[in-house]
Each structure stands twice: as C-alpha cells, then as structure tokens.
Length: 252
Image (cartoon, rainbow, N blue to C red):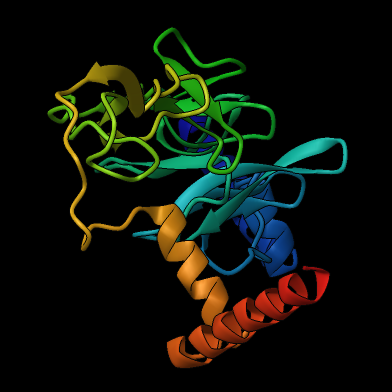
C-alpha cells in the first residue's frame, strides 16, 4: 500500500514539472539547457555566446580571437587576417598569431613580411642584417653583399706621343680593363680601369701624309676662318716682295 502511494506521488511531481516547463519561453528553456550558448550568432558561427562571440565555426572557416575593446572575442573567417596564419585540422581550423615583429607569416617560425624597422632574411626578422648581408631599405630585406669584379688587363697599346705614332723617341702606352660586376653599397669598390706608362721606341720620321692631331686642328681652324686659296696667298706674297724691292730702290 505504501509503495503504491509513493509511486503515485512521484508521478504527480513529474507531471507538475512537465506542465511548468511548457509555460517557460523557448529561448529561456534553451539558455537553461545551455547557459553559455546563444541563438543570435554571427554569420559563420556554429555556436556562440553573447559575451565571447563565436565558440565554434562552420566547416571550412577559420576560428580567430580578435580584440574588441578590452576583451577578445571569437570570429569565424574564410581566411586569417593580417598578423595571423591558419592551421587546419579535422576537428577545427584556427588562426594563430604571428611573432611580434612579423607583419605576415605562414607559420610562427617563418615570416613573409616584417614590421617597420625590421629586415626579412630566411623567414626571420632582424633589426640589423647578419654578417655577409646588408640592409635594403627599399625592400626591407637582407641582400647579399656584392663586391666589384673586373676583367683582366688588355695588352699594352702602341707607344704614342700627342696622338702621333712617329717623330719621337719617348712616349706613353696605355692598357684598360672592364667592370664585370658593379659593387653593392657595402661591397668592395672597383679599382682603376686604365693605366699608362712611359715607353721608348726607335725614332722614325713621319711621312708627309701622316699628320698629327695639332696639324689637323690647325687645318680645321683655317677652314673655319675662311682661309684663302693657295694662288691668292702666292699673289699676296709676290706683291709684298715687290713692295719691299721698291722701298729698297728709293732708299738707295
């Protein structure tokens, strides 16, 4: 008899609880079942909370913690923002923050671009490039130091003097070499590319056809000044000679 009464009491209590639950609003019943989950999730969120933002993301989206005022909230993005790199796994895809000096990276140990004041080298950021490299302020990367390279000396040229190859015994001869590689800012500068030395040759007379630079210049100058033909010059010389002869006869 007592067992029957006890069973009847339990049935009545469960029935009253059921009736009470039917009068509670639907949203309130959901929060009571899941106090940390909200139904008003942002686009891309699978689950979220009013305070923490997204808790989990829909498939193929990355979960990231971003600062919102004084707190961090979760967001779901198709790709990770600047300063983060993505990690995909069967359970979830997350965005992890790059190192402090990295602006972009594809892994925490490999930067692809450094923040201002740092130079990129082999996936790391340096305030000063290591030995053997120099700072490139244009690309903000570490470039290999390049030293100057020159070719071998050419053979010595002919012995000359004032542009002529004859009519002298002592002259000068020169040789040259070419620059094959220009140096970088910190590279070894290029040496001289030409040099001269004195030379001695057997003196030989110049033929009438051979003209030195000085004679060529004089001829050009004469043409510019409008030099008179040879016949006119000869006539002037003859007149001058006749005039001198007359003066001599008068004096006599």
